[in-house]
Length: 110
Image (tube, rainbow, N blue to C red; front, top):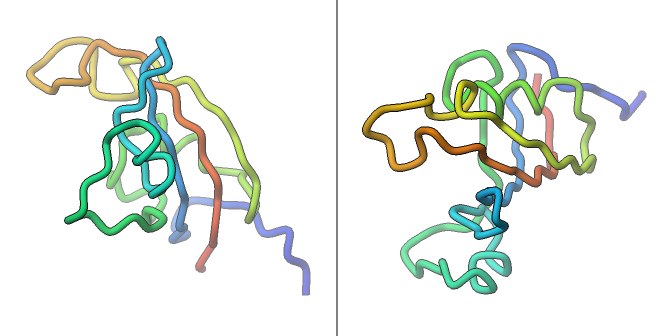
């Protein structure tokens, strides 16, 4: 059986990520070591890959689009403009910002 599955709409995936601003400051991550390195460590948080059902709108559009076509263990850096993140304006603290994500796909479930 081929292990070269690619993420498509309807799949449930697990992905590790590091989210940064354009200047390189980390604002969120699913990885314990990265959180500690960035000074974001929260003992109440469970550092595990994020589970996302593709096409269900659980994450920002640019994040979901970046996952489509990825294979297990693939890593990818993506830059997500405000229009595909939290919008160009609004009350969200990340609106108006271009976000940089380092993604590592851990699992695909069909």
